[in-house]
Length: 458
Image (cartoon, rainbow, N blue to C red; front, top):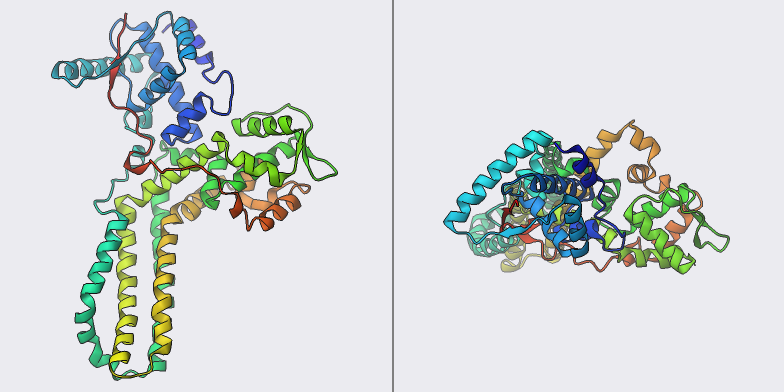
């Protein structure tokens, strides 16, 4: 291995100059990647380019590495200077899907695996063997989409009303109204509690089964904060709070934020906060937060976590859970509706059951919607809380402490400001960002271009 060349490649900064939409931020945003996965993908791309520079035969990237390569090609000046560092310009060879090329690229992939083993050891599975970041989760996609299943379920419900009426009507005529109503409410409450706890346990088990090499096991505290809260405002709060605790930002007597010193600014999110405050000199937090929410380095967090939520909600494991809940609750709804029809047909008092029939589908809709968020708002955060107990990260990192303890981890001077802003904006809901997170995600979340066969040697 050419250690001198490899060290130059490792030291090469693809993010220079650091901007709001620099290389890594753009790469993560467009591919719905987490921050850790993005950094590791870039590092594997550097390994690939080392192999391309030192091999006299074609080498072929994985789909994840190819996505990094495509992004680097867009940054033409950086790619040119990187080629100068390598000693040659690496040509990107697109595939035309001919039989001859298929054999050529197959040999290139085999050669790449051999080179990688010789120079770097075992390649990370999630980057070299998976088509996207999400594929490593091993969550097969369900044949039925939730929306399609719900539509089919409603149609089946309407079709079954008549046979259920003739089945239940003889029984219902002998059950007086107060007893039936109280019994139905008790059954409904018991079912909601049982189904919620049952589904929560199943989803918790899914969370604990994610392998160590998956991105789920390597989430950053800011990503977990968004995942649990489903809102970017607490993420911005965590970043600003960290800067206040590091004495980079201070709160002046007018309750405005100002820059105190520029040491210890590390992350892209912190750099963005400092950049905003440097430009505006000073700012109320209520004015600063909405501006920060629209910045790409914060929106990339929203996009990657929302994409995961959609990916999991389309998986076979979750869809089956959802279907079980839907069927049970639809049967409960059927019991109430047939009671209402029976009362109307026989001239029985039906005012209270009519109210129940109106409110029950609303409660069911809210319940089912809540199930779609349980993995994000409960299971994964709880997984990390169990892992972090007593660790140094819990004790020394303010972002981790904010994830674990919420407002109790805020700086005493900052906490009343945050609470005031949350109350003024309706618990921060007024600060929702304009990001179209996951709108184009669909089933291709995080997937990269698969048309690249490889690159030539000399």
